[in-house]
Image (tube, rainbow, N blue to C red):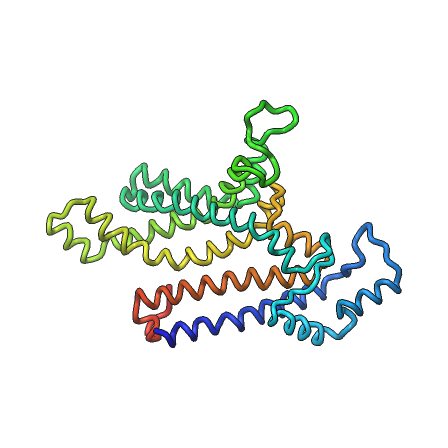
Length: 315
C-alpha cells in the first residue's frame, strides 16, 4: 500500500509541470503586456528597465526555468497588476473568501444532493423520483453564473427595493454568503444527486440485498446499514474533484457578487497580463485538484485492494 501511495503522489509533480508550461505559453502568446493596459502610459525606457528587473527580456525557456527555480524555494515573484506585493501575499489575501465559499457550497451540495439521490432511488419510477430527478436536472441545466444572475435579479436589494432583501455585493457578513453559496452549489448538488441515485440503484439489485430481505430484516435497517453505506463508497470518486474545484474559487460567481476571492483575482490577473499572479494561481488550482485526486485514489486503495495491486483502476 505504501508503494502505491508513493507512486500516486509522485504523479502530482508532472501534472503541475505540464499545467504550468501550458499556462506560461498561453500567457505569453496572448497580445499585450503588463505595461500596455489602459490608463498606464510608460516610456520605452521605463518599460525596458521593468522588463530587465522582472526577467521579461529573456528568452521564454530561460524565463520559465527562472520562474520554476523560484517556485521550488517558495518564491512566487511579484504581482504587477493591482497590488505592488508578492504573488504569495496576494494569493493569501484572496484565498480565504474562496475557501469559505467553496466549503459552504460543497456542504450544501452534500446536504441536498445525497438525500435527493437516495430518495429518488428508493422511490424509483414514482412521482417522488421524478420530482427529485427534476430538481437534479435543473441544477445540471443552470450553470452557476445563470443562477447568480437570476438571484441578483430576484432576491437582492437595489436602490428602490424594499428593505430586508439580501445584499447584492460583498463578502462581509453571513447575509452576503447565502446567494453565492446556493448559486455555486447548484451544479455539484445535481452531480452528487444523480451519482448517488445510480449507485443506490446498482446496490438495490445485488444478491446481498436480496438475502437481507429474505432474512426478514427491517427495510430501514437494510437501507441504512447495507444500501447507503455501500452505495456511497463510489461517491468518493467525484467528491474529491468537486471539492477541489469549489474551494479554489469560481470566477463567474465571484465576479457577479463582487467577492474578493481567487476567482476574481485570477480574472483581473489575466486581463492585466500579470504573469506572476496567473502562474501562481494556476499552480494552486492544478495542485489542489491533483492532490485531492491522489487522496481519492489512495483512499480507494484502502477500500479495494485490487486497485493498489494494479488489477483494477479507480472508478
